[in-house]
Amino acid sequence: MMRALGLDLGSKRIGVAVSDRSGTIASPLTVVQRSGSVARDHRVIAGLVADEEAEIVVVGLPLHMDGAHGAAATAATAEAAAMASVVGVPVVTFDERRSTVSAQQLMIDAGRRAGARRRIIDKVAAAVILQRWLDTQAASR
Image 1: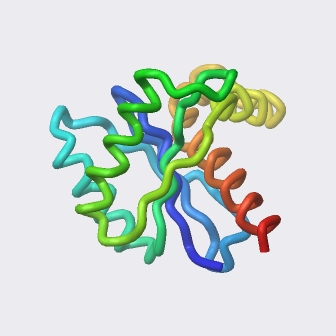
Image 2: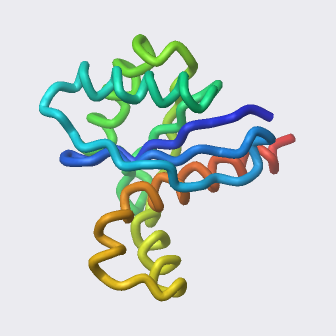
């Protein structure tokens, strides 16, 4: 398996998660504040890819609950494609439906207060997305 970086793209922040070296477990890593420049944001992600020695980037794809692509999924797909030319590793999209809800519940179950949850929700959602992708990869082997 390979080390992967997971992203939860938002309009203000990008949640980032990373897998362990065996590609088994995803962990929240950081939150990147959007700078107003997509190119600058992608360079920051490229730096994280290099720092973490990631071999693939998994971008959350915000599908509608019925699986249909809407404006948000189209935007995420376009951003993932643009990012691929900058980060130097393959970039794939993966269904992120209910990832934020799952992340919220995980933090509530862990006893995190609302203020703490708001500060880390994006990177925890990225970890949920990445873990689901890792599990899918393991199941397909």
